Length: 539
Ligand code: DGJ
Image 1 (cartoon, rainbow, N blue to C red):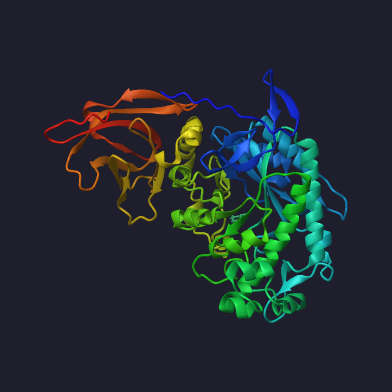
Image 2 (cartoon, helix red, strand yellow):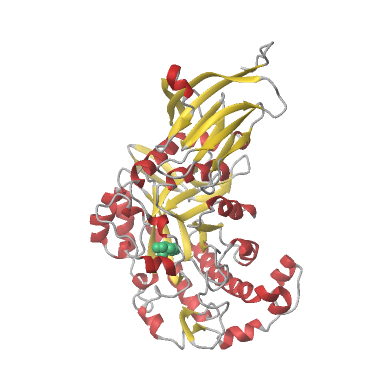
């Protein structure tokens, strides 16, 4: 058993609240590096792991619906944070008339349910279009001009070059930040997502007159420095020019919105990405969104954002996690499939990437009797495979993953990073892997369980703690070492507040079963090694 003692000095914003008979200091949520240099989300000055879920797009527009169809289906899932939309159309239904009654009630409901919120700002852009702009914005097509296709016909997407539209979105977002600053004193809201899966669809770029004019200009100085290129967009970026051009303009717009919002209320902020995927052409995925190759550009153009976050529905979950941590960005997964595989993937994201959080999409469906599954046509439009939303029987597995991770969080935040590893099966053809540790290696064989995906996190501490699902493990000597590795003791159990509580000691018949199956579990193995002649005294 380990004892974790954490003392934090608070750089408080001065709020003191009473809760459960105790005074505590409320400081702003923030993303900062810990003493190991790992970027973490801090809530009330303590590291926090978002074990979350994102709601369907329309759920928050009706509070009654939230009470009847959402909250009851979220209870008992061990979720600590809900990601939900706040839409410009309801916040500013008439120009300069702001209404935060929905936001206010949603925060009240979340407090009652004892969960935090991440607010998704559905402003000018949601999945490449401008459906969430208020009616008065939609109707004024000249003032808020649309991006155009190559044949110069108008799209339904307001152009990122429309300065006035960006200004109006920014004003509404700032009002939202002002509202939170004044009213969310206990920091129910942890972060804000600025826009949603931004980018232009069905065209590589905006061909409006304003965009055509800007496209002929010299690329901005920041990009000259970043890419060591000069000239206009085409000279600098060749066949990718249209996409880089859109990315620059979207990112600058987002930076304007997020940056000004942060001046009012300094919440952590991010923008999420519709990932590039087959068929890999900008315009098929939203052109200019923060896809992996554009992370450096987005980071240069939108420094107000704390991170760029992938919505991972593609099969190769692992590569996307790697891509979105490559450029020093902390990993946050605001959307992913809600199939059973999610129960294993969360262990990988935590173990391999110290993710700030994980959130399957449409989370209110997984325990719902009456599922509102999306129609296949809609999914094709969004380029999401139908399996991602096959949530039959996800609930028991996800609930258990989240419960185990909740108990482990103190360990996850304090263990030296080289002592924590995460892995997962990337595709059904991958048979397993070997994880290398200092004294032994662990051979992992992926099991094809009901959840269909193997994933674990492993902590090297007093032997090994393994948490996750669908894997058989065998401890093997290091390459070139011809000694034997034996199990000294094998236990099942779980962490509670960071302290290991063993359940059964698995010996005899159970000792042969070095595996976890569909339902996520935590086990502990203590090992010793010896050559055939001499015992060594590692343990
Ligand atoms: C990704 C979007 O970001 C979500 O808002 C939602 O539309 C899902 N796709 C699919 O339903």
